[in-house]
Length: 274
Image (spheres, rainbow, N blue to C red):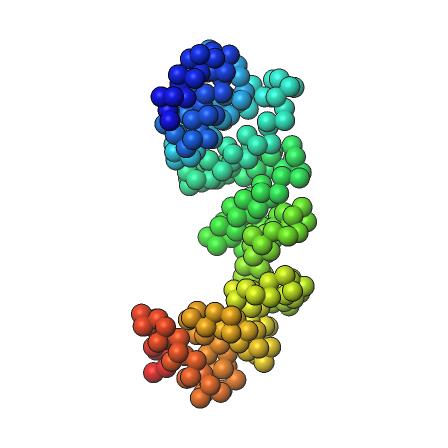
């Protein structure tokens, strides 16, 4: 606990610089914050302490205060070659912190720091993803071209980590927005064996085939999804809509009624049946 940890450090004063990390590992975030601040008084030019204090403040959702310590850590690391390895992570974490403050100026600054993180370490896949998310959000508001920028970043992230489901799903969401349905199918089909027991995967593939106008294939994929999780009303409802698209009214009513039985609050399905 916190008291025992502090007593241990009091007996080993050389370890006081790590007290904040010990508290943080115990998820004692308030104690970690206080310990980092105490250590910074002793070691005001320590990049590690400022950086980790910033990360702890982020965990406490104290974003504005975290900014202060991230920026100080950047200033220290940029002046000390021995601490340069910290820079990609600090740039990334500061960008994340700024993006959570939502104002236009903070988002614009977040974009610049994600770019710095990528420039400092082009292997930092999560920075590509998070920068893409910011561009995607901007595309939703007023700039369709930002969707294309986001798509390029998601592809870059996936090249660094081809097995990441998050990166693939991010690409897929933009293919849908950009009406790149054939591209979505080409992305998903090679993943079939890996996700053969995943109903969400078949649901995504069913949607891609439906959007591409290949309704028979869409039905096949949705049926696979329903076989795996028959209690998933969402896939049943979408299967019903594809049946409607083929004017197969009896089949559509059967699955839509089952979807409504599973989710009585679904007014969209209620209206479709009516």
